[in-house]
Length: 545
Image 1 (tube, one colour):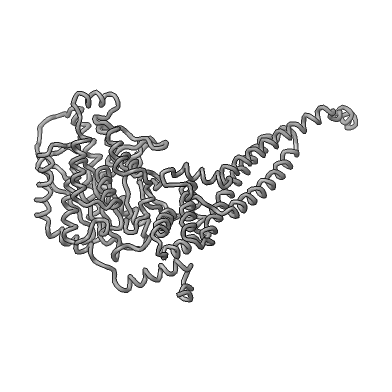
Image 2 (cartoon, one colour):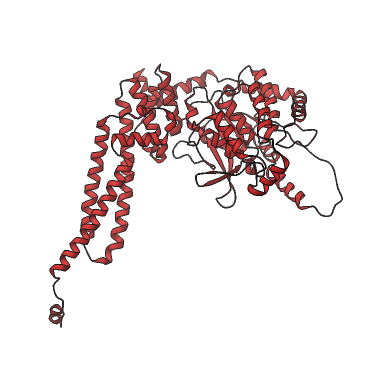
């Protein structure tokens, strides 16, 4: 029987053998093309790398910033070729083992190999960039290589861990000691991008949070003006962390990132009311029905681009005295519950997980546009695959979020002072005997509940240590909408704010006193020791002093 079966199985003809070899050859050719495409996209030649960096950050200047030694590129190319040769041999063996039944297995292994090569290529490039910085002797070349690494980390954020393992932080900290301000600025940006944090200004973390509220942000300005008078310091020097929502985000950026004087901030608020919150009622009503926005979002967006330019959030870390700053929006297209999104000018250290999603790779004007997209006032803002609305929908008082972010940034540092600024509140004591409410009243109650700021205040006031948390939120004489633009109403806002501060002057003085408390001599010594240990990879730094 066995001999009969063998006799029935005829050997393959010459045509079948040729056809089989042709199929294998075609498959191997496709695999080779795929590998070459991935390698070229990930590493590329020197000129391709320069063009990719230029596309990532076209506003940053000339392409000269992307200079790189040809030796580094050759090393990466050699590694890629070795990876491809090994993978090609393995793929050829696997595909020659059996008939068509193994096609799916072979295809999945090919895809996995491509992904592995891509990951290895990115890691190799990260290592090469770090090594190139170490070898740099000329400061101009060093600046270019540090900035090139920054662009690489922005494009491939997951490679930050590899850079840290290559001991990038000690190298950058030593470079930061140079007298070249341009080099120091480039190093500060890279350190912020990988999640390194410098010691705080005082003996603990000092935090400022500002609620949303449109033009009612003038109320918060009054409190900040008084704090500057009592401390003798501008806002950006008083705080380690500043966080805002909607109009609070605008203030946080103007004061924390641009260091704009308070008088100029007040003038900008008046301009905001006259230029943006100005709309014909009929036109606004039509627009409301058409795109659910009473005001012209394009005018607001154009104004933001003119004032803030095209800089990225992380680029503000180049300034030596710039605090950590964040703006909060709400993402409404990722299912329920809604999710808060934090636009940061910093990054968390690899392995540190914040409860709140966010990023530092966005432009300044995009962060404000997303954070201030109040439903009914401005259109929702699309950023990537996310749909953003006003951060006040979830966290109109961002104090709890700010405390959490600071805990991620400085996990072992206590909270010295938290100043929380509201934009005014109105309490109505009118009692009615109605047995039901209108649809408008129901919607108003839902909105008021969602944007309430005092519940967070009550919780933090009970949980935080005494003389740590200070909330300033004036009680207003009337309910002023966030799009108020009439001069007499804005003047009334300021008057109510000043009277509130006069009644709470003792509380203000206590907050100012705690804000200005400095570090002890022991704390300064500990900070110095930690810095030197970070610079020289541990305590053996003593031998290098």
